[in-house]
Length: 271
Ligand SMILES: [Zn+2]
Image (cartoon, rainbow, N blue to C red; front, side, top):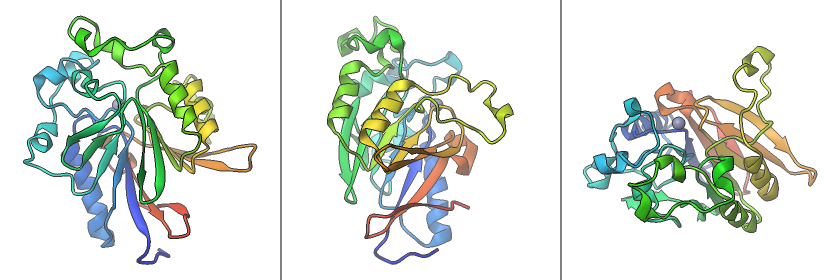
């Protein structure tokens, strides 16, 4: 690896689904193997930071997946995120908890929700995130208020809407964009057989936001599948697209990036 001690290393993580210890194990294994430290971690939704059973009840999910998971240990400060951890929401989240802070906030020590749509700066990089998935029936309206969380289906809270997309567009630029679902049209596997079942992957609004912000790096999850591609723009810029697997799939769920002092951003081998 051609790196200097001025370099910053950070990680991106796919759908965690409450398995925070498994995630930290994968990241710590990389740090141990390389002797390098990660400065921060970005996560692409379906994080599932449930504090307790009541939070789980506000998640859209089949009954068999409704588990509290590891988060209570972090929320109660019995366990720590070793580096700042930033996440967006997916379509499986404790809306009764996260909708209390639609603009984002700290949910445990070193653990930050970016909000339904939000931005932050990390190591000089502008990071923008848009939570949720595209659902045509929710796109034109407003999400129901938090007060209706127990009378509405949790499904009513999983979609992003037009107003949130508009805010993301107003950010104008990003170095890194976090989306849960993939932009439409990016999945072009070498073997066309692999397209089966993936014909309708992604959504046009994810593509729209990516094209508007033209980030150096787009991170997404949702499909529980590792995939890399590049989107090239008429401006001459290009976006490296990094789709991450479910944390239970092991190393395919994480990606490591090196940021050089000159701004160069490069994915590093995980193995
Ligand atoms: Zn997921």
